Length: 213
Image (tube, rainbow, N blue to C red; front, side, top):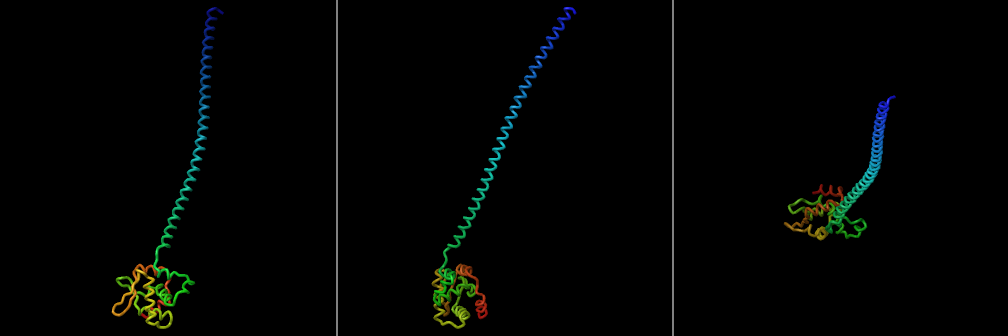
């Protein structure tokens, strides 16, 4: 083998070694890049896991807050309903209205004429006649009602006393007027509406009275 051939082979070997070195360098760089990318991916996975955990925590808090809001809304609605009910229950009423609402034990302590006034007031809308000032109940009708209730015609003084009780208990909503020799008890529409909504109508007595009028 000639000297020139040997030199040529040596040069080729050097070039191959340089190429191998370059490939090894590239390979090392690729390995470093892969490792860096793997580390980045792992870091992203950890962050993703943290994000998922955070989202779950927020969803749990949101559900809790939603439930709490619903509870507060229900409580507010209950309080508003309670206030409305209390307002209606505590609404000022006339003594006549309170008289109708007396329990049986208290009713038994009323005088005879007070009980008669209470009896008439309970069904006032059935007995009274509509007039411009409200509703009117004359002495003749009261006498008829009491006759139907007790089975005998009441004395004039009894009818007058019952009218006085209706007037006294009705306060500003009830007044007695006398026209053409006939006494009438005048009830305002509000008073009649209030009394009519207190208790059920005594239909048996009412039917008898309405049949006589």
